[in-house]
Amino acid sequence: SRNFVTLKITTDEGITGIGDATLNGRELAVAAYLKEHVAQLLIGKDPHMIEDTWQFLYRSSYWRRGPVTMASIAAVDMALWDIKGKVANLPVYQLLGGASRRGLRAYGHASGTDLPSLFDSIRHHLELGYKSIRVQTAIPGIKAVYGVAAQAQASGERYDYEPAGRGAFPQEEDWDTRAYLKHLPTVFEAVRNEFGPDIPLLHDGHHRMTPIQAAKLGKALEPYDLFWLEDCTPAENQEGLRLVRQH
Image 1: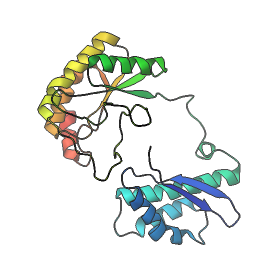
Image 2 (image 1 turned 180 degrees about the vertical axis):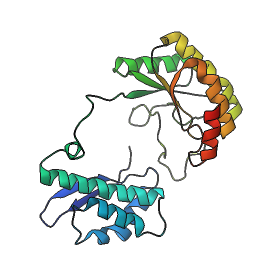
Image 3 (image 1 turned 135 degrees about the vertical axis):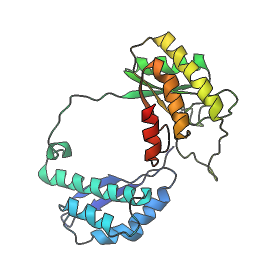
Image 4 (image 1 turned 90 degrees about the vertical axis):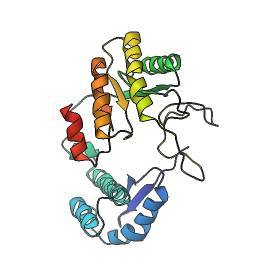
């Protein structure tokens, strides 16, 4: 149900490396960038000069740091490390210094259109073994909210979130920040009352708030001890993030 962009690099010795260049909703732009601007620059290069290749691809472009450029460069970087690992006959993490952890904390994405369905989703993820839960909820008066499963897909699969849904035009949603700021703390209060104080809870704001709104939400959620509040305000606004931290 998703589109991916996969880059395959083959050396003159027949060793292949795979890199992922998926940029959700703009996959064709990355594919074109790789085909038209990157692939020909790699021909004849030493595949083991990974850092040099990264710097060359990054600095040779007048327009730097955009998501299309960076997704493309990342795919090349990934594929070259894949090649180096195969030549060395070692997994790449060993080339980068070896393992330092035995496991990672993972979270389950729970969502619901009301408290009963949200609680069911949380229980489902806890039963799967997740130790942390990201809580996303519908907002009264808003028809559809990204990150909240409202209906099953044609495949019958649950559909919680997808940055760019399929269709002739981008999906548009209505939004009411005041309603969101009012409703969300009541949801987290209910979740804590139902599941107790020990589960690490997370929430994604999806960049919907201004810095002062995000600060207000963070204050309102403090009693419920969030593990993190994700994307509370657009990340390019560093002054805005400082304002959030101050509160």
